[in-house]
Length: 227
Length: 298
Image 1 (cartoon, chains in turn cyan, yellow):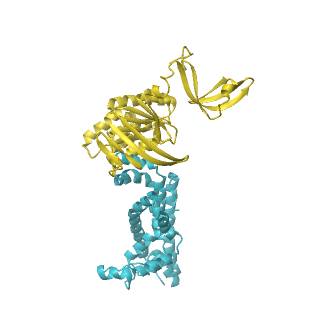
Image 2: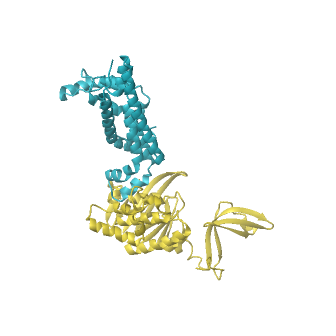
Image 3: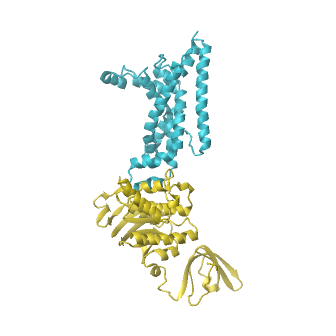
């Protein structure tokens, strides 16, 4: 008989929070670039960012595992020179989650940036303000709904991740065994009672998050979706 | 003194247009750019502000070079100190009126000094009561005033106004035209206004430049450019033919003049060359016409 522990839940929440924070930081410049650039690589880049929406998570996980593997390539370089191992570690999970949830943060932000009139940035430039000042004082404050929507969706999506986590993290208790893995693990061992509890907790948290999103949506009609 | 000589190829809805403009603007002058939409007026303002890069030419302001294609000089908009009022006003929705103005202050100045300039302009533009409001709660005329105030706070060396009054009703236009004239005199700023409204042009500008097909076709005092001096004994209006009808032995022309439609009769031989859509002048003797107040109470 298996038994329920809070550890996987805690790990899931920790992973989702950390992923959301990192995504927030890296998605702002990426989205700003994607919405403004006239470069030829714009569309390929947009497609690439959106890949996790359609790609089987196991594919992404497989490639990341190859990349992280200390036996060869970049993984070996990290191991040899910095003594860093990413395969089957929590930092590896975070990197995988960031990539996997990237479209959920980037796409609402791109839509948000594109919805702002160009004249806002131009007015700010003419008033002598730099790009950075314009981004911080004018653009981002007017993108609050998109930022909120992106953050909530990324968090919820990271919680629901399974394939990527299993491929690159395995199920090391306390390190990489997140709640979604725990459900699978318990079912595999025929411990349905504890599987139920994990499943129910995940269900409740996810429902609460999405409910919050739709509630905020109803307050502000302008929140762009993830697609 | 502002000297500019600019060339730029524009790809518009009507095909390719080569903008080729040369002009000098003296300190304190109020210039109006007049011309059809698509004639390159807005592009000209944008090139002055540094938002659009010309193909060739140069811009010099008080001896300082802002743009010179020959020497590869192109000052970014941040360093030109231009006061630009956008057609859509471009007020920052996340800031109150006061914050919009404070944002425009150049550099990290002492708070007290900065505050006083914002205060002064808020008072001059009669915006004090709206200082704590956000742009979305303001009327068109109020937004326009905030946009102008914000441009003035930045202490610009030249003021560029892109049809700032076009979205407003006649009465508000008239009021703001007066304010604009006063402000321009008070701050003595060289100003370029894009406008289609002849009344506005006569009231405000010391010089008008007519842009046609990318070139300055005519330039001079509004009275000279729009025919007042040549035909001083006549009233002359510019209009477009909307319809030509045959009525017995005469032709009835329906004209659009400004925002009003007018019906006039012509002899068939005079109407022969006229087509619907033609631009026409309507002239009448100026001696003793009927002029009466539209609002008898005023």
